[in-house]
Length: 125
Image (tube, rainbow, N blue to C red; front, side, top):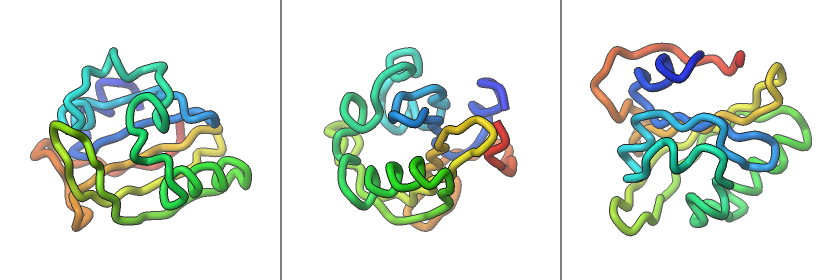
């Protein structure tokens, strides 16, 4: 998917390299986190953008998935952002093709966060 296609998804979508550096950061996630896409791309997700995620429940799963080169898990998480704290469902997916991890953010019940046209996502990039 290109950046425009990612922006049309009704979920927060972040692509991370194996070190946790942000490669893609879609429009829904930008609105949720009150952070411009261009200010997120290239930054370290777990330390510079969302340090609240640097816990075993999130970062630990990310690291283990990168090491195993296999990850497909969902869990509930509380983003403790100052401006917009929220409870969400997180899905982490490892893409063997790109050797990256996709982070999908939906509401706490796993439903879309935006009311745009829904598309099915598979981590093929």
